[in-house]
Amino acid sequence: MMPMAESNPPVTLIERVASQLGAMIVRGEIPEGSMIPVEDAASRQFGVGRNVLREAVKILFGKGMLAPKRRHGTIVRNREDWNALDPALLAWMLEDDTRRGGHLDAISELRVIIEPEVAALAARKATPEGVARLHAAWLAMERDANDALAAINSDIAFHKILFSLAENHLVTSIMPAFEVALRSNFRISIRRPGGFIRSLQEHRLVSEAVAANDPAGARAAMTVILMNNERDLAQVIEAPPGA
Image 1: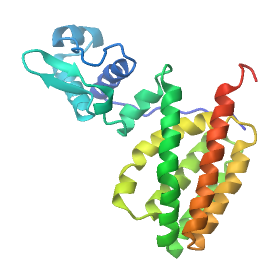
Image 2: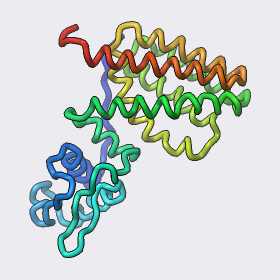
Image 3: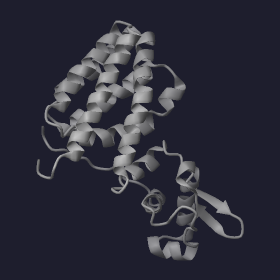
Image 4: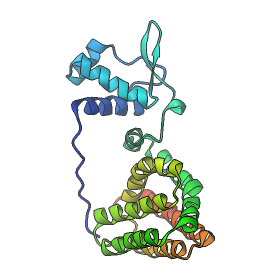
């Protein structure tokens, strides 16, 4: 499989500062319960004006990471108060090398809780048009099997379509966070030799179960995908360097 090359989309100055400050908080450089630097010091640290810093801080307020403290300023909230399914926050968490393994484990557990039932819902509600969309997504996975980046994108597209076929607005609302989680997962699991080819056939079984309006079959097929994905992750992560 060919190596991956991916570029990040451009961000505004405010988003860049929010990302830098958010990542510092996630890494524990500004611990939970502590105050964030006062405006003048933080403005100098990030090389921006106070208005930009204020707008960046507002973004982190919206993610549940910060809270005002009367007569003190702004404090970092406890991790359990953060909106961990916010796509940007989840991405920062997955970039934290010291905790990435724990986050990947949590993602695997969340996938087991949610995705088999999403597949079953999709099978129960699928229309001929939806079945055709899912089959086309599987064909794209097959086409992209020898290009790692394209394969990851096609795999994610398959799951996004499956979520949309569930026709549940609460389910589809978490897909942006799931996309971040899946991308981080797949960037690792795709390095397992033969793993994607095996997964390709497992996804075909999900597509076929959805086409047959077979919720139990779709649930079972998705469960197999998740079990094998967890094994792939573990084998890649635990492999000795150079293996």
